[in-house]
Length: 110
Image 1 (tube, rainbow, N blue to C red):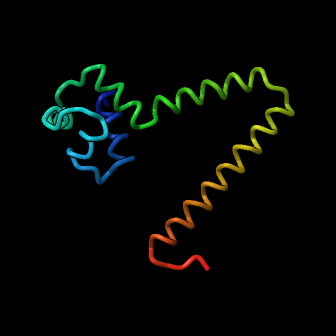
Image 2: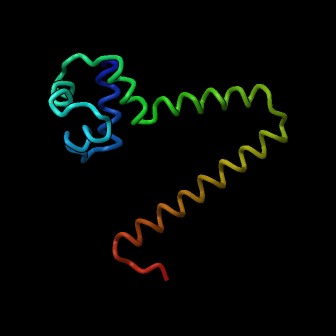
């Protein structure tokens, strides 16, 4: 699978119901150009970078790089604090996501 196919596939996993018009609005890529891209036309580097940014792939890479630097330079105590912070943040996000989905389904929070 080509890099272009991978990034477009990743985009569709994150935004499965977006129309070409919504994608165009989000990326500032012309509607007709998006149609051609999703039908196999070669992607320009600028367009690839836009999709990297929108999908968070670039952000994930940056976070992984920071994580590896932390592993090599932080003390065990600092790594433990970082691990606890990330665990708490993930748990909080999980709770908030669940409560939002419950509220969006018309159920009461009480």
